[in-house]
Amino acid sequence: MKSAIHKITKTYHNDKTRLMDMLIEVQSEFGYIPNEAIDEIAVATKISRADVEQTRSFYHFFSTQYTGKFAIYLNTSVSSFMRGRNDVARTLEKEVGCHFNSVSKDGLIGLFDTSCIGMSDQEPAAIINGKIFPNLTPFRAKELVRDIRAGKTLEELVVEGYGDGQNSSEEIKAVVNNNIRKIGPVLDMNYKPGHAIKEKLKQYTPDQIIAEVKASNIRGRGGAGFPTGMKWELCRKAEGKQKYIFCNADEGEPGTFKDRVILTQRPKLLLEGMVIAAYAVGATEGILYIRHEYKYLKNYLENLIQGAHERNLLGKNIAGIKGFNFDIRIQYGAGAYVCGEESALIESAEGKRGEPRDRPPFPVEKGYLDQPTIVNNVETFCAVVKILLNGGEWYKSFGTDDSTGTKVLSISGDCKFPGVYEVEWGFSVNDICEMVGADDVQAVQVGGPSGSLVDPGDFDRILSYGDLSTGGSLMIFNAGRDILEEVVLNFTDFFIEESCGSCSTCRVMPVLLRNKLKKILDARGIKQDLKDMEEWGKVLKASRCGLGQTAANPILTSLKNFRYLYHKKIQMGTDFDTGFDLKAAVIDASEAVGRMPEA
Picture (cartoon, rainbow, N blue to C red):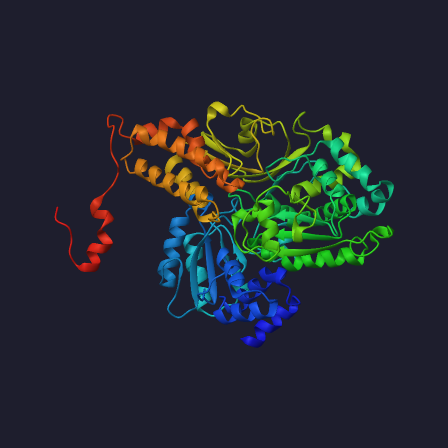
């Protein structure tokens, strides 16, 4: 074991900022991260054991306990439950012979819960040793366990063939479908990869590129909507020894999967956008931060980066521009939704816990390694290429006045055609429902759990930064769904699970809100409980990052738009009910001493 760990640390030059990579490889090699590995990594990187341990303990896919020769992670997203996750889970437990979050007695198979894995258009889905198995059924689950026990390899578990597009390529071999339903001007492949770099960069100074991006009025596509041109201008003017370009491909918002599709089908467009950004702000290094669940794309993307070097689209004197040197490396996460926040993502890339930083300073001033850093979303970098090729005014001709251009949407739930759609800003929710074949719609979640749950009365509202803003996720729920039980409770559980725990507001309030919600679902709620939840939700606004600030949104937006559903659950004529069950509260202690309380 010691020699294997030394080989891993040496691969990353014993660099403490590459701690994430080291831990990922150790986890993959041994099926867990043993204490010996933590000790050896600490010595090799010259950091304390506590620093290694705090990073290890933060991420979902790192474990100090053996996860089995075949580790099965079945996702717990609302889309998964809507498509039969419970039946699949029960079948797995029965066939494997252990409960979830444990390993079979023979150590062969481990079963684990995990948050949304970016497959909401093909649920239920599981990750087995890094390979995606979507559209699971109880029969398929039984078949997988049977084949594992028969000694089949991971590749031999695939029986349905590989997915569409590049998913079936030799470098990916994924049982995943892209489900691209609508292509717009950004995702349109009617362009020559590398042309923007080789032909257009020479025609512009860095300041002129920034001016063109500003003229387009494009805003960040990750959800926050900060003007991209302004961000680049601030970074270009910032003082620093070195500047960095970060692509945020850590799409952990449940219901979002558009970046996965772009990484699969349009990766050259993305890489080209990062190069353009580097030229504009004077950066020399880029980091493509990808969520752990998409690690199956590793060989494919690394080969593309190597190919870009060979074509002089990366490396030294790119496109013959003397002194323009820029490189890109891939950094994988290890399961932490909060790393989608830009400063938490930077912390993670530095080998630390993915906890958001206090701001100011902002990343454009002091980001990665305390140097000026641009962090943009996958979709934003893709759009920039088309802006450079066609001009800012061309891009501004799409969309609305305050929301120019197009938006790539991930649409899932109760609809005939789930998948990826590129549309102009300015579509209404009704337009979207009609486009995807959704009937008898009760609610639409716009922007994932951190967004808004809207009712039919708001379906004429417009998708735009000025009205209904979204990072890309829309989930549709028909009239047969129990919105409070199936959706709101699931989303609240998600925020509790994904909180980094740094802020007391985010650490405590979602749990209290969930307890109130459960009380209401158990028919013990009263009117005051609704008022309490509304007041408690305000406290979360004091959290320092977007996760905490929006963690109450599932409850608050459902209270606003679906209050009648709460009224159906509460005791309308009762003014006081704590919901406290004394017998349930002391059951563990009673069982321990063998004495039950008298009635």
